[in-house]
Image (cartoon, rainbow, N blue to C red; front, side, top):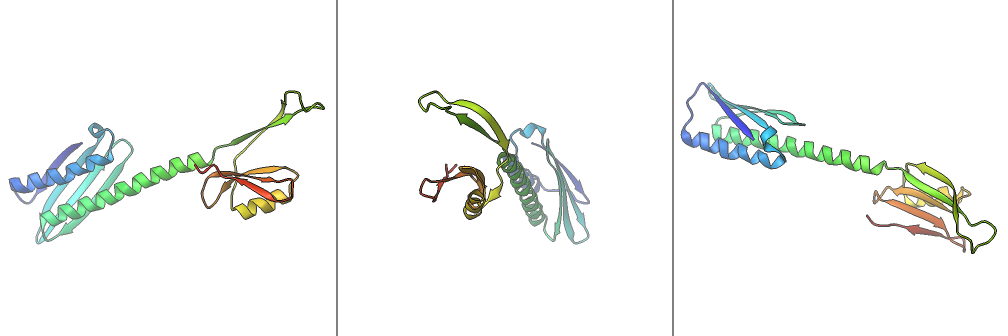
Length: 180
């Protein structure tokens, strides 16, 4: 990660420079390719306030954070905490998008026909594709009860997994939950 510092209205000590470098280098853990991440840190003193203005620019992320306090070391810590919180939020948002994409997969069902002779090889006579709707197991059982089908593929709203509910020969329902 490329970190550049700008100091305004004061001359920083070497200890402050080292401290800031060490603290902001920790942001590299949020990026796979740290060569494409640029961090501009502007540290300034305004009367009794020590202010930090940080701009993070990477491939998919552009964040800014501003903090101020009475001590420059505390200001650096505060602005770093703020940036880390924003990066965590961004990462969770991206994870949520991949989960959402995963959830909206279509299910493909093939219909088999054995013909008149049960010993013959089954042949596919039709195909159906749809996105399973999220619902509870009870809702799926009620919906299957009103349908002429033998089974229903649905997304379990509690576990977020794809489940199959089917009618048993004795009139009860069976549930298949692969658990992944």
